[in-house]
Image 1 (cartoon, rainbow, N blue to C red):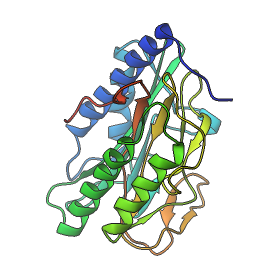
Image 2: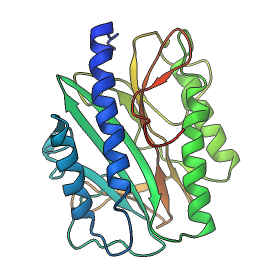
Image 3: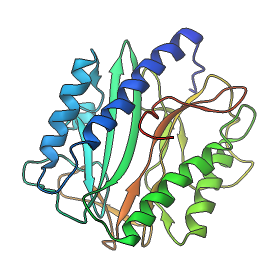
Image 4: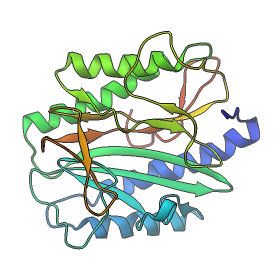
Length: 252
């Protein structure tokens, strides 16, 4: 069931969203060669707790960490580890959620570690921009497929592929609510968007093919062909006017 949030609920989601966005800002300050993904996980956990919130991901369906830290060909759900040490030229996707006063925020970014290749930088830029292309259609009265199709169109026009096995989602009292929000589809299809809906819109984009596999840890999703992957996500509020991005605090 798709929930329409009240003004009171939206205010609570703004708070959770702000904490989520600022957590990414904090973590990004520490991304450099020689840092382990476990260190980044601790930084995120400590920051979220200082805000009086709880990490949304820890123990969610058994997930063992506070953030997802996915390096290079890892698409999503990379488990932080003291044994995964970032090196010059890597890219890392950080996905984080914060739970405060009964509501969740959810957001992700992909960052370069030191100097990265032109291809990696372009992938990160295209993935980010595909989100913004999608939310041009995140308006009251539009169809969900309008967001999905715009993301897919932009990504494929730039020569990359959109992951099909993983999608965005509604968000609110639960981390994952209806509806599912694919990053591929057709204009004019899907549920009608309405003011008060809150969606986690999250393009996951591969340099190579869109096929993915899950590693033996039962969490980490990687590209099947070993190509680089990037991730960009925000929690978005549908309004009667322009959509409001609840987790965007690190960039304009």
